[in-house]
Image 1 (cartoon, helix red, strand yellow):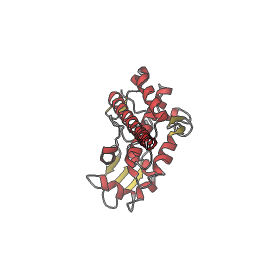
Image 2 (cartoon, one colour):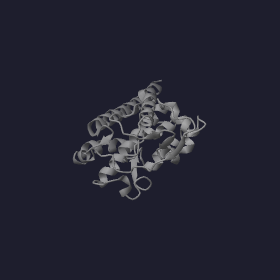
Image 3 (cartoon, one colour):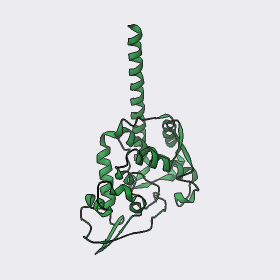
Image 4 (cartoon, rainbow, N blue to C red):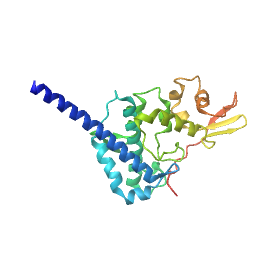
Length: 238
């Protein structure tokens, strides 16, 4: 009996530590974004100057794990991990004018997360898109450090508010006239919709149908849609 009780308390202790660890990471990530992100831009120079903040997060990421069964917590964790790792990748090579200035920025350079080494592409494609193929809103919260990407926010993504945050950021991007360019019957949209076209067709008949679900002023019926070139210039605070 005593042995059973001991096991129960041991398991409770593990669960409590795990939950507390996740909470600590989100708390520190939130403080980090609030400190270094302003109006969709990142102060990479300040991050590099105050390395302790980023190093603390990297230390936590190295061992932190979240079960896929805890869907919102899992998604929030990997979104934050992606955005922090992008900043880490830029800072490690700063000053640069674009993430593409760094060879293998997305598909070769790895980051230690949850005890394994993983690239940015693998976070996006294996940890998120492959696990949740119907969630196209990921594309509006995973920020690649380029100006062409939807803007990074100055707060962490959290399980309790994730659905609202995903929708909010999707609406923000799609209603931005620089992201969806409309001129009479001609529409130019981000190459994100071209690169990940299948993701946007999960619940809709077309990409424009997806856009119109979140756009306040709907696209003109029968509009001619094209793609504009992606802006890979660094999303740096000026």
